[in-house]
Length: 313
Image (cartoon, rainbow, N blue to C red; front, side, top):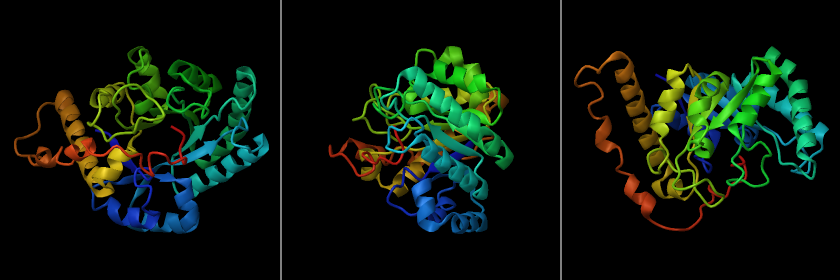
């Protein structure tokens, strides 16, 4: 019922070659790529290995920071995004995730002008390359200083205002799964989103909160994904938990459980739409689900992955 992908950010200490070898083993067909890992291997080599393994790329993360908050100039950030678009095209990645950057000492209106100028510059190249630019808002309480785009409605207005099919939305349910406007915005979200990221959490988003595996927190993730699909969303659903629970469970455990969770969501969504599945199909899917869950309650340390700066928020 939806295209399931797992993110390289989840398995932060594995390299891309190792992930490629494990993706099919754990039942995934799509992988969300992280630019530092691609660079370590080389874009051409990564494309060859992915193609030989028959693995599709759901997205490439990330480019942006156009406001200069990370120390780069506007021109340097745009040039980097041009390189990222070329890499996405070579990797057959349909989506490049775009972070706006923080205000960086600018007024908010000027920061917005810088983002719009950058996207207007990049959109024609992205369109020619067959790549969508997916602008990613970030809940301000979760990642202060990472982005000035802090709301779904304002990001939708921005994306829709370009009137360009290559400019889309990256929707992170960890950041906005409890947003009061979500239900009201649902038709627009489903139409604008190029990729949806999935991770769970307990309590409100905050810098101290891990991105938990789906089902380990309180977000209504299955319902939200089902609602998006029901309203016409047909892009990838990327599972990208990061943090202490992932380190405790182990990457193998998280990937295995994620596959089972995604299959169960898809089965139930299909059953609601088309009727119950024949008896016996996927009967064993529930047998292993949750066997790793008890481990998430153990330990209180912050992990390498949870503090990783590769992807804001």
